[in-house]
Amino acid sequence: MPGYRIENIVSVIEYIEEHLTEKLNLDCIADAVHYSKYHLHRMFTSAVGMTLHEYLQRRRLSQSAKLLVFSDKPILDIALLAGYESQQAFTNIFTAMYKMPPSKYRENEIFYPLQLEYNLTGNYEMLYVKDRVSWKIEFAAEEDIPCWMDLVRLVIDGFPYLDEKEYIKVLKQRIQTRQALILKDQQTAIGILLFSYDTGSIDFMGCHPLYRNRGIQKAFLCKMMDELLTGQDISITTYREGDKADTGQRKEIKGLGFAAAELLVEFGYPTQRFVLATEAPDLPLP
Image (tube, rainbow, N blue to C red; front, side, top):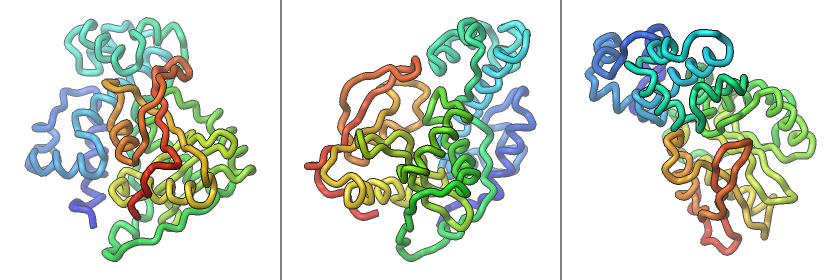
């Protein structure tokens, strides 16, 4: 069972969204929602998977990116709205996260978010089951697309340059060819995976933040290795080492037994390929 109440996390997120352009830090948010800052830090990080500071920074940079593309505001004004005291400080962090300076991002006229607002509405009955859960992973159907996309938006921090329209087009193709797996708690998608029979690649793997310590990724991998890609090496790409935009995806992939392989550039973004070899030791049961 989680060590927090989901409605408390929702109230914190709502407060952040309402005051996104104001001066915010752990102390003032804790005062506003009536928690000690230590409890708030532990609770938020446990539920969301990143610190409150990281979430706030990524939300502000996402809103800044939107203003760069869809408004004529000067970069300095956007920097001040994002809580930075100088254009240079804003440019430094924006470039570290988006891999290009704000001026170049504006020229490209293509918006994508680092972080969308967390929406934690849904059914989470399995969170409160004390006994070991046997995850029922199934092939996704077209009627699963809405809840699938709800989860995509929750884990967008792990997938830079994701375009929703193009993604849904690919998703529909993968559903038709039975290369899309889903795990649901009632009507809420808590795990999703796109893969390729031809290449053995995992093209998208997302786990609901509230369930990330419940062995869902291992359950997906076991199903692929035992039933779908028997005898094939499995590959996945993620952030390169040291990428400031990485909120823990690289560590999670290494923890699943994947070994680092070649460096890549995908859609203009520097990434690294990881491989799980068929001769790798058996994954522990989820």
